[in-house]
Image (cartoon, rainbow, N blue to C red; front, side, top):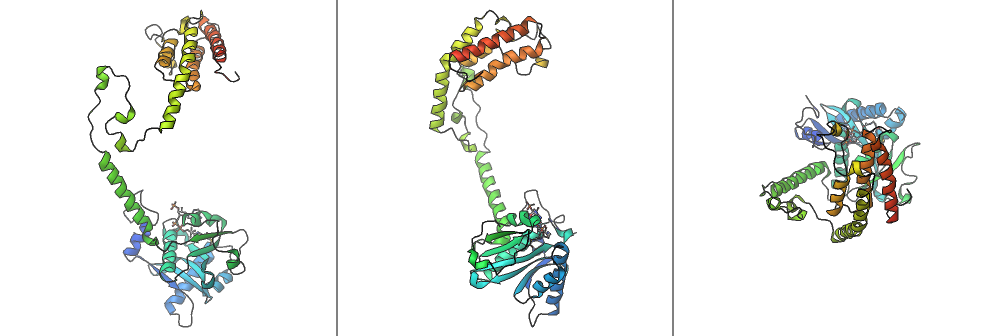
Amino acid sequence: MLGPEAANLSSQSARDEAARQEERQGLIEFHVVANCANASRQILTWLVEIQNVFARQLPRMPRDYIARLVFDTRHRTLALVKEGRVIGGICFRMFPSQRFTEIVFCAVTSNEQVKGYGTHLMNHLKEYHIKQAHSMYHFLTYADEYAIGYFKKQGFSKEIKVPRSGYVGYIKDYEGATLMGCELNPRIPYTEFSNIIRKQKEKLIEKKQQQISQVMPGLTCFKDGVRQIPIESIPGIMNTGWKPNSDGKRKEIVESVESLFAPLKAIVQSMRSHSSAWPFLEPVKKSEVPNYYDVIKSPMDLKTLNEQVRSKQYSTKAQFVTDAQKIFDNCRIFNSPESDYFKCANTMENFFYNKLRDHGLVDGR
Ligand code: ACO
């Protein structure tokens, strides 16, 4: 079996990993070929085969036009040969004085697509330009609508770095196609690049895992009555890469908690003293209402609300309003509209929003 199915690949493997392995095993080969006076029979056969691949994969291009360019002596083709036959290629033309190369046709035969060959082909073409064609560090192409995604993944973009005057009138402009360009970096070994990145990632992950895979002593302070500790004091937490909020942000939260504390305390106090507050003073007891917690999944009551205000758990008005609202909503979900409970919820809700308004904490409602 050939192809990515045969290679022992993981989901982390780069798209071109299988093609790279096949090349190493000699199952596929890459050749830059061109029509010239002394072209061998083998080269001419490959050129005919690649012309057929282009014609089948680019049906909107006239066949004789493809043949003309593939056999034009100014064009070269990077051919991908598998088991003696061409299965894909890139036809290109170099413009040395303008320092760019036009990618004219690019295709992989249909039953070999999306296996990484297209990526490996492009990487070979990039390396060819870096090694063989000095200072040719720009590719330009008119990409078919359906191939834009492929070209983007190969580092092409619509931002063209070659001066317009350098290519207009030189390269073929196709209707409905998008001009895309790619700048090469001569220091990148393109055919090995994804492999290098994967290995670096693995090393970094391994290093990080070694740093953090330590068993830390458990926290005992809570047994001694401590209720809260700073997160950064938990043993090992900093090694995981956790970062405390910046001082500015933390200061903002503290200020917000402090400024809300007095009004929230006053509001809850006045609610608890209201004559309609009696159903909400304490959490509903399961012993008294056995099915309550089957229906109500996020319970709330004035005692809990009060405790949360006093332990300064609210840093925004919205958090507080959300919790208070649960008291009224839960009640209306569980009880019928005719019940006293339901009526108390409505009364308390109105009272609550009036109080918020009195304290300047409500906008609109
Ligand atoms: N649109 C969007 N993404 C694509 C397309 C596409 N048409 N083709 C491939 N890709 C993606 C793949 O999913 C893959 O993404 P991933 O790495 O995130 O999984 C990535 O591009 C590379 O895939 P490869 O397997 O390396 O590419 P493939 O061997 O399939 O070759 C090619 C790509 C040449 C475009 C091939 O699909 C083909 O021959 N298509 C038909 C002909 C064509 O459209 N050619 C380009 C016309 S424009 C021109 O020639 C200048």
